[in-house]
Each structure stands twice: as C-alpha cells, then as structure tokens.
Image 1 (cartoon, rainbow, N blue to C red):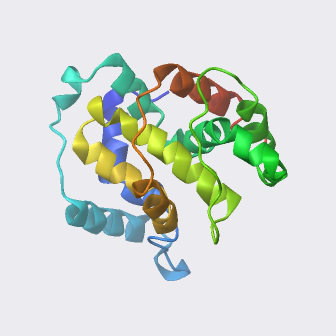
Image 2 (cartoon, rainbow, N blue to C red; image 1 turned 180 degrees about the horizontal axis):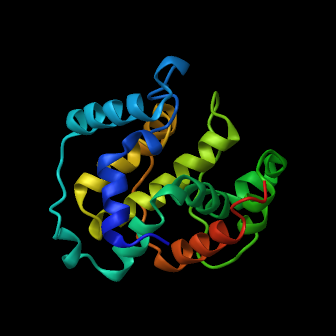
Length: 190
C-alpha cells in the first residue's frame, strides 16, 4: 500500500492514471511514457488545485484510508452501490448484470438499504456506480474538496450526472471499510 505522500503525488501528478476513459482518451501516438508525462503535466495544470506537500499531516485516519485506496474507489463505489440497491436489483433480476464480486458484496447486510428504483435509459452498472459515488460523496466532510473534485473524474459524465440528482447520503464508514476489504480481496476476480 502506498504511503499517503506517494498516494497524493499520484493523484495530483498523474491524473491520466485515473481519469475515466470517456473523459480523456489517449490515442496510440501519445501512448508513450514521455508523451504521458507531458499530458499528465498539462492535465494537472488545467485541473488546478494544489494540495500542500505537508497538508496530509492534518488528514484523519479515515481520509488517509480513502486516499490510499484512490485507484479502487470506482470499484468500491460499485460494491457500495450494489449493496445499497440490493432490493431494487433483486426485483428485476438485474443482479445478473453485476460482477460476481458486486453480487457477493450486495448480499452483505450492514446498513439500511438506501437505493432507489432504476431509471429509464440508464444501465444497471451506471445506476449502481452513481449510487456508490453518492455514498462516496458523503465523505466530503472528511476529504479535502480538491480531492472530491478529482474523485468525480474517475467516473463517466453520465454516472456523475445521475449522482448529482440523488439525495445526499450520510457517511457510512462501516460500509466503506467493508467495501475496501472486499475490493482488495477480489481485485483480480472478475
């Protein structure tokens, strides 16, 4: 697991490692280490928002865990979303459209289910991701805003738009911690 300083460096200096491919694709001509370094610099400058080099000292242990698992946050969102949407997914037999890891985690009973019915013209995966992203957004009380802004870049614009129309959720640390463990255990399962 990376140190908190290394994780923050990765987030701020190498955004192409996590920006959703729908938001920013790299053609094969620029898919070289040198070109990516230049593109990362350009994208980082455009995103703005600097995190002080020693700013991580003030981060809570929860925030540090969140940051250390940055690259897994979309997977974690999918797990949390599946768990929260369990009842609605089961009604329409939509569970079969989820990964095995998502289905397994959806069966975990650790919090009230807070999902809503699937909307028209939205895939099951988008709805689950948006629900999970909405749960991650509750962490804005613990996580610096500059990181929350960059979190959104890990998801497709459609998922972010869906999430922004959902009612805010309360921070559920237990569900997040369970999802982190599940994601780490099942990283290469699907």
